[in-house]
Image (cartoon, rainbow, N blue to C red):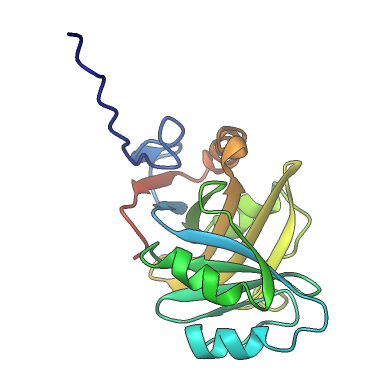
Length: 208
């Protein structure tokens, strides 16, 4: 009797086959640091009409208010990013109990788990702003794009969402959310744009 096949599902990096660890581009001083962010949970939240309970729910469950302008509010475990009027992106630093959290929020919002739809990475360094200027008209100078600012925009004709976090030891730091279907195109643009400055890639194992 033939044995039944056994299927084993393995989790792969959202940047597998796209980004490799190492130093690339110009040698000398490091211009940009790249860290891929793995195992995050993402969900879109759209406030239900005449529902006043969503912000109460996020305060109770996440200890976070909902931003009312293009910005991100963060806690140790979650973040909420403004995505438009009455729309937000919910980020969980790991997916443990993420479905239960979304179920608790669904009474006051249309909720859609997007964890498999996006890939995330962090870009930082002394030359990171020069790289970003090659892909978008968004001005990321600290005077107009402070820590906590966020944008939903186009980079090299690809839709992305990104925000600025606290500066790292190597300089300004930004986190990007890219559709998984566009990771190869995004990376091709980034590698071409950052090569002249030298960049180092680390493949992450979670959210640091």
